[in-house]
Length: 489
Ligand SMILES: [Zn+2]
Image (cartoon, rainbow, N blue to C red; front, side, top):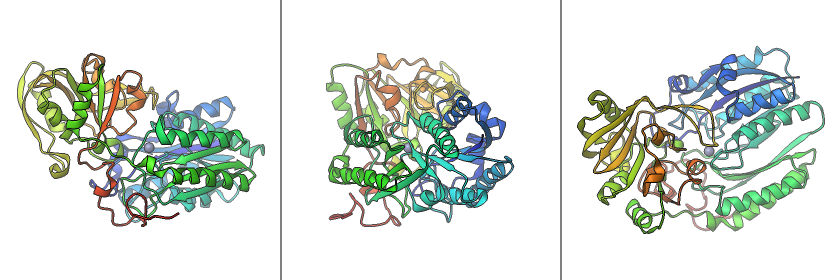
């Protein structure tokens, strides 16, 4: 059996930031053919799962094309056209195929195309014809659209946030393709959408966990997959929603029953998804009252994992203002300051302006301070979080500065902190600090929950605020909960 695999992965925040050109994908993640196997074999990613499942089931995996960039502004049209045509060329040149498996995000938008995944799946369908199985994996922060549903044979979305199960979804995609080709399963998919914009919330605890448990009860009744799709609210396209996707084996009624039941549950408990988080000063006061360390404070509103640059200064400024005696922050995206530290060298004391270079009205003014350069590195390390474990990470030139006794790490790539890697690289053992500041919504939990005594999320102004009413939506479909009153489904 021969299965082509490929990937186009981007979470697009259309509200902020400049358009994303093809060069960003080429710089961050652009693999053709064998390069995909070199990059993803043995790594806990969607493609890593697809490759291993191919090996396990003695399937010939034909790697086509993979493009991947961190969340950022609207993809330039030319960039998307290039990626799509490269993927289609890879599939076209793969020879006789039994199935296609693609890893997509589900919240990608290009200039003039709100739904790049629907467009991609439709183009693959047009290329391979109506009968070839196409299985797509998706991020749970996706916009699930009818075009995606109609064009693919089945959609498999990660269940967990942090996305610790992307490898498993990739693995299942190839397994489902094999079972579909051999006729042991006939996937039928149903989608139920809800008029809800859910601020990012973990599935490890709380209401999203309860909903997942209901999904798994349905899976135990024989469904292939039932997923609570949270949706992605930090963008402005009409297709934002929470939804439920179910894949059943030749039983459309069962798939529909499952999605309706889970969707009803989510709708009934929607108030539990309303998110109100403290400002930094309050979060720090909470941390100091807590008996135990480290207390991890996550600045969710400036999360590079959702398209905010990570250069905001609100939490770091509050930590400095609080005069903390045992604190570290990792990290602020500020290539200029990193460069300055590298030029000055270890042991130098320099005058820095941290942050304040991008949207200072919203993300905070620069922090002007004297900083001691404790360490400088190249920012390269291997991911240890269960999310993407084993993958290479390159945060560019980095520095550990000491500012008013706080160990502050500076990086040159806009990236959220998902594990202790950026700290350890600079000799910082976070367990020896009372307060550990970082920028991430929830993905950090996979790496930090095992070592944190307490976790606090803080939401000062920023591009990925959980206070969705602060975002100036123009295009999303209204009415939508919780932005409008009296929303009915
Ligand atoms: Zn996600």
